[in-house]
Image (cartoon, rainbow, N blue to C red):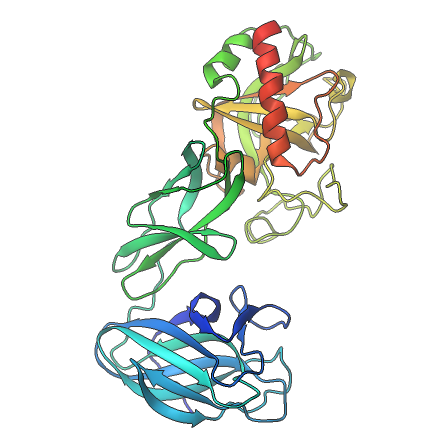
Length: 430
């Protein structure tokens, strides 16, 4: 093993993304850097294999980040392109399964893609492996592409969901994109669009997207976007809904501002027999459960709670659940007078699209026009709470009366199904 790592840049390969045999991805110990680590489950012969891309042939250093919570060494054979280059490499105990250190092997790699395999040689298996970093004097491309931005559902069929997103950038060039459902890659694409087929009709799926380059560097994943495999014909069009709310029978006693820094209050709440509506902008609500997208670092005004709570307890997840925000009750308007509350279904209409959401939070008493990170992302609006949102026009239609609330506020499928029925009622009867 090398005692000192080289000073050149390193390309990192997460353990959970590699090919496995007689090993499994686990998360039951802290300290890993990706979404999991590889556990050899006390089996001799179990192995993990990476595809490693380097810019130039020559001597490179393989750095294995690992943990070994036992007092015994757990050796592994290291092979490159099918040939063992280091046998019985020692991976000593690290003091705890949550304590990771680096073990290094120096070897020769060919230019381009190489396979690197680590195989446990004892009955106890290998150590827990977190990632492999590859570096060398040639200095491989170690910069990952930028994160794909603003993923959105661009279309659906009874068995497929189509996605688009903003193209990523890279210091050398983007080779393609990976579309994940959970931790599984369900599609790849050379362009900023993809269609995932073979889905069950009526099923909902949440995807994230990453970008990768020719050197094997992969970006972090995008914000999640949720779609439903159906024909999209289960409810009124955006145009039909807008036609029903193109005039205002004002029910608020005054008007709201769209932001604190605007000079005039111009937005009224309007009434229909089966709904209330208003047209404003969309600010991003990133409160509730802490996620990589919504936390104190990404949102200056982050609050770890929402007015409404999930059916199982706890606050809502803005990055995952499409919901909207109503102004807190005031002399201008009190949403409760129309029977609106947590879980009330609300249709948001923007740019020819309809997104069915629920009321999930309350905001300032003088401002209107806000929805969750997930609602914005699904509508193709930049969901970044620092710079995202849109000046609109965005139309919010909150359905009123009996039977307008979902049973489980976090059940987006139910919001879609109920929302389409309520929207059709509005179109048919007003």
